[in-house]
Image (cartoon, rainbow, N blue to C red; front, side, top):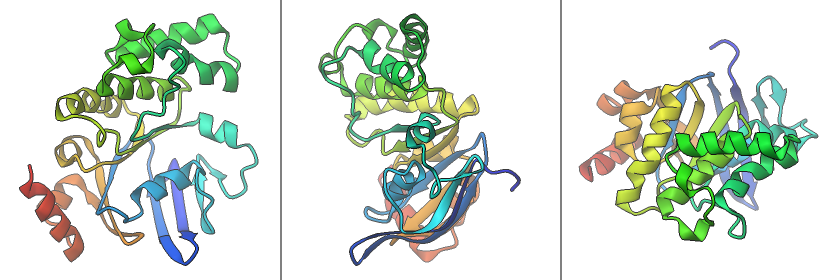
Length: 246
């Protein structure tokens, strides 16, 4: 793999004596959609949080776009290039949807308000909630709030998007709204790392599947091969259980 956007090298993360991540290594190419799956507590979310240094890892390194995160002294600049969408939206409740989306471009990149608002309205239209710009988060459905969170992350024009179980807090009817937006991003070449249990989405959209267990990458494969013939016994067991629910 030449010139990966993200290169993870022997990454280790500990909380006291608990090892959340242990000797994790992987490269991720530009323009790919990678789904990271596995049982609860396997280190999936911890891995995403290390990639934008929301967690301070103890071992190894993450190299993003050629720069070491361990050596990074400008975290705001780093995070302006990595968009992250969380499970619980994390929108500012006292700001309108429009102001939520424009805040970071104005503060982090110094964009004039008019320019930031023009971009925000275009992004809100793109995710299907342009008519909700003047409302507050509490006036939106869960699916609309998550789409607003995606627009907010996109407003910084990131090189990488991280999704940490973006549909797990949503009602079933709202999940489709968010997955539609994510499909659109993937098909338009956004580099995406997605932690999710939405296996139908993974099968349709992901270029590769990364399966984690007990803080390690147990299996990584192209999507079709992962679903048809996973090699690791733990991956086969997990996949059997998940697919029986579909």
